[in-house]
Length: 301
Ligand code: MEV
Image 1: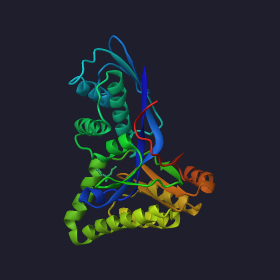
Image 2: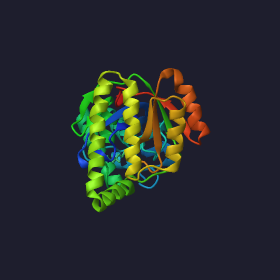
Image 3: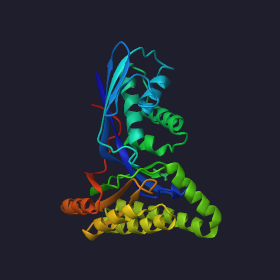
């Protein structure tokens, strides 16, 4: 039996602007999806959603991984067990972590010899097939682990600081939100384009502050980034409530992460204030999840 796991991700800076070629910083986080794979007579996929064979309704990502990997290795039967610490559909890269972790488990079990680069690329192709559209960032960061400056995938040093995630519990559609920003940009290009380019500049200042472990500045820049995300229409009342409550309890900074609209916010926090920030997020109606940034990408456990 093989057990593999892969991490989820957060955007510290630059979501949406990265779609327009601006810089963003994306970090792997210590919340993982674990996949156990074992040879058997038929295909069986087991998760909190139930059991199935190849089934694109119930288990689309794992089904797609098996079908794709059957192109290079005969997979007659395998039992796959999924456990995840990542909330689904909340912008933390849960589908990428599941896809990448499943590819690595089958890669090991059937001795396919895929490199990390190949796993990331196959993972992206599968996410795109299942979702119709997907950025390569989630699968890349989940495969490699660590902190990356996009779009050039420059590896940055880890920030050694607490992160409290606040899940609004509301689904959001990345496709719809990216489209809304595009429409706003078409209507007011002289206003929206400079905002996106300033978000890119915030990311560059963020990189410098991360290099210096200057958490106060990182937090201030996150707050400015959040204001601009609000201005392009990807905030929400629930996100703002969690963001302001985290700031009021001394978080260095707080902003939404990912597409926005719903999903999750993140607060960068001194380790001594994690409990206060977490309680504040909960009192404001969110589900707090404490984590940190990790260098560990997909691994065999
Ligand atoms: C979503 O996680 C991040 C966005 O920037 C979209 C993308 O980069 O594909 C909103």
